[in-house]
Structure formats: structure tokens, C-alpha cells
Image (cartoon, rainbow, N blue to C red):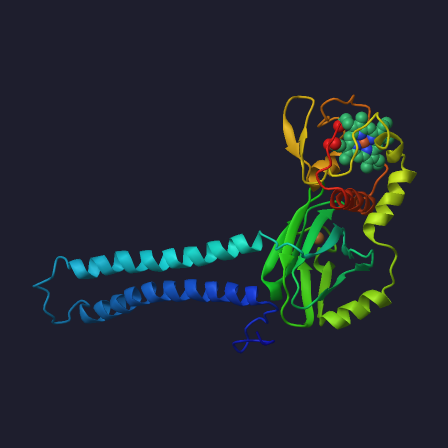
Length: 316
Ligand code: HEC
Ligand SMILES: [Cu+2]
């Protein structure tokens, strides 16, 4: 894929995915024009030809023609079906991040975007990513609903308070692409901008170095785990061990079960009484007033890293 516009005046595309989205839009537009234009052309012709007072043969009107009727039923049907298949493929692709994507945490708030790289590097209203590598954004809001929108990627995703949403993309064209908040979120909504800076992998590595290494998120989370007293319970018999938890099914005290994903871990910290693990008393205090989104991100990064270190460890 080359950079820039593929039609004059066409909005630039930063990824192969964006080019496909454009083909979808062009395909739909072409299909509509193909079937609406003949109707209006025929309408105009007949209005002119059979206008009042005009001498024209008004007898011998054909009452039906099977070929025409089949054509106007089948052709749009097949065309719409093909476009449906194409758009369903794009839709599914946008919702299935490939394994091994670069994971970046995003916190939106009135009125700024905060990004945090796996190595702990943070930036505000700008996001550096390497070209040609899948990037997965794990997003949450500290206040109202926002929406992350980068037109050059043809991707947009709401960012909600209290719930993680995801967006993944692979930028194929290096450049400085503008992004916006696409959900009205208050006075300075229109100023809630961001820049997606797509760099060659070597430049991205240099940028990471220059941004320093404040310690990766997981080890910052490990520090919090001690400071906040989590380890006092979770490294004793009083509470379940957390190694190997992430991604597994958890049996609950009410007989149900739940998969330990990001939403579950988050709820365990903020609403511990909501889902109580089978075999343990509901003694875990809520941390809702102690933790901001950045601290929650670090704790979750730590809990996820425990799963990588000790996958599928048997639980008592
Ligand atoms: C007073 C002891 C105590 C403290 C302090 C505590 N927890 Fe817990 N935690 C528990 C108990 C008991 C459970 C199991 C019962 C339940 O689900 O409420 C639990 C459940 C959990 C779960 C769900 C575990 C599973 O197996 O599904 C997570 C995750 C968790 N805690 C994380 C933390 C983190 C992170 C902290 C620190 C911010 C913390 N806990 C502090 C006692 C504690
Ligand atoms: Cu916003």
C-alpha cells in the first residue's frame, strides 16, 4: 500500500483495512447509482415523450416482461449479497485482534486522551505506534462517554466509564494522522484531539528509549499489590491465589461461573461483593475510592502477568 490519496480529494488511508472500507463504500454507492439512475433516466424520457398534447403512440402498451422483472429482482439481490459478505468480513476482522498485538492502555477523560505503552511510557493526546504491527487498545473513560476516532484508519470505538472497550488496527503507512473524540462530551469536546504517529519500527524503538523506561506496567502493579495490602490476604489462606487466574473459569459462591477477563478483575477490585469466589468468605474490601483508572490498569497488568508466569496452576 502506498501513502496518500488513491483518488484526488479522497481522505487519506493509513491502512490496508481503510482501503477496503473505502471499496465497500464505493461498491454500495455504485450499486445504488446503477439501479436508481435508469429509473430517473426512463422517467425523464417518458415525461418528455408522452407529455400532454404530444402526438405519440399510446396504444400497444406491453403489460409485462419476465426478463426485465427477473433482472431487477435478481441483480440487486446478488449485488447486495456480495456487499453483505464483504462488509461482514470487515466487521468481523475489526473485532478479532490477532495474537501478539502490541497492547496499549487508553484512558479518556474530559478532555484528553492518555496512552500507556507496555513498558510504562505514557503520553497525552498523541500515540506513537510502529508501522506494520497490530496494535490493540484497551480503553476506558474516567468520566463520560467518549469515542476514539481516527479517520485515516476508518475506525471508531466508544470509550465508556466503568467498562473496557477494545479497538485494534494495523497502520501500514507511516505518518501523522489526526484523531478526534467522536462523542459529544462537554464544553471542550471539539478540542479533544489526538495524533496517531505511525513510525518505522526502528524509529518507534528509539522513541520508546527516549521516553524512558519507568518500569513496565506489570511490575508497577506488583508494587501496588503490596502497598495496598492485597498481598496480605492473597498470599495467605484467607483469599484465593491469583496466579493463573486470568482467562480461566472461576466457580462462584452462588453456583454460577464466570471467565476471569478484564471486566471480572475490574469488578473484583471495585465491587468485590458482586461475584464472590466459591469457598471464600466475602471479606475483600472495595477499592473503588482508592484507585484511579491508571492504578487499576497497573494492577490488572500485574494480574495478567501472573497468568503468563503460572498458566493453569491448580487452585485449592
Ligand atoms: C481482606 C482480605 C483481602 C484483601 C486486602 C484483598 N482481597 Fe481480593 N479477595 C479476597 C477474598 C476473600 C476473595 C474471594 C472472595 C470474593 O470473591 O470476594 C478475593 C477475591 C479477589 C479476586 C477474584 C479472585 C478469583 O479467584 O476469582 C481478585 C482478582 C482480587 N481479590 C484481587 C485483589 C486485589 C488486586 C487486592 C488489592 C487491591 C485485593 N484483592 C485485596 C480477600 C482480599
Ligand atoms: Cu470526548
